[in-house]
Amino acid sequence: MAPREGKCARYHVPCLFLQPGSNDIVLFEQFGGDPSKISFVIRQTRSVCAQVSEEHPAQIDSWNSSQQTMQRYRPELRLECPKDGQVISSIKFASFGTPSGTCGSYSHGECSSTQAISVVQEACIGVSNCSVPVSSNYFGNPWTGVTKSLAVEAACS
Image (cartoon, rainbow, N blue to C red; front, top):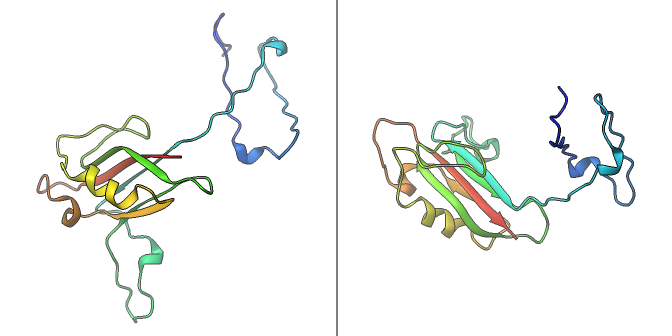
């Protein structure tokens, strides 16, 4: 389907596809277009997000393999800034309970711990990566009988 008159087509080129220096990019436009109107904008990712449920399996590196039976630990939410030298500078959103949405548009659900933002800030501000256990032991139990999850959006700079 061709873009409507006055609308523009947008293309996303992941940084991993580009090499240092000069790059040739070939666009195959099915419906015509004016190549002189093509422009590129560099956008840097400044937010990192994660959402993990209480029932999410624990990271495999948190299992203790030195025993005959593997002991499973609680799941963790892990955040890491994408570039060397960056640190987590703020927590834009944190909710433990029944949050919904996606990165950049999370919202609190009916069930939400009032302690989530302070717990995540304490664990993550000022470091390049952090782990936060996903458990009512850390956030309180805002609602019984509901599987809760932790959703976080953090800014790196």
